Amino acid sequence: MDLKALERGEAVAIGGGILLGVSVFLDWYSLGNRYALLNSCRGPHGSCTAWDSLDVVRFLLLITALAPAILAWIIVRGHALSWPRGELTAVIALAALTLILFRGVIERPGTPSGEVSVDYGWFVALAGGLLILFGAVNRAKQGSARSKPPGVI
Image 1: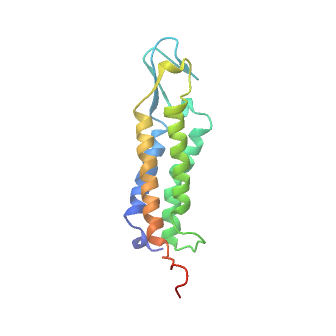
Image 2 (image 1 turned 45 degrees about the horizontal axis):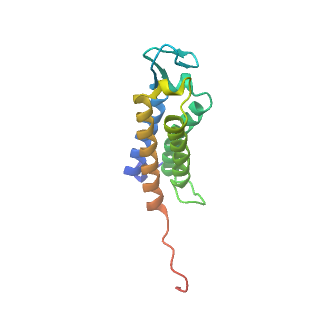
Image 3 (image 1 turned 60 degrees about the vertical axis):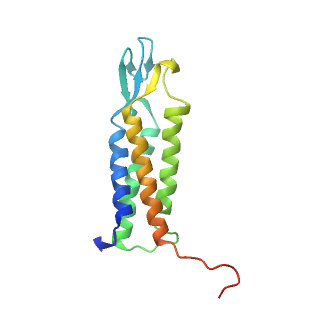
């Protein structure tokens, strides 16, 4: 085990994973009036966490939050991979960011949709996903070998 193999990118990604994991239990949605309903959460002026409002996505986000720790474990242990380290974590972070943006901007859960708005937990999740992506891409850049242009030996 070589802890000195970890660099700033892994620390940033792990911090993002912690933020993303915590955000699942923070308030993601605010309910505007007394008719607003989101699973077991009711308005007026109520709020709902991602754990209470997102059935499958909550587990996907928690799995994504573990990805940077798994990347750090691979780096510390020095496991050989057939792809640049950090590349798979970056892909997972992109998928999570897509889910976060979809459930916050495009299609929010609950009825009526006009009375459900995003709360601070959604922004924490977005920041966590971006940090995971930034850290993983940083690591993938460092680990990838430079390819030569065609025709050069």
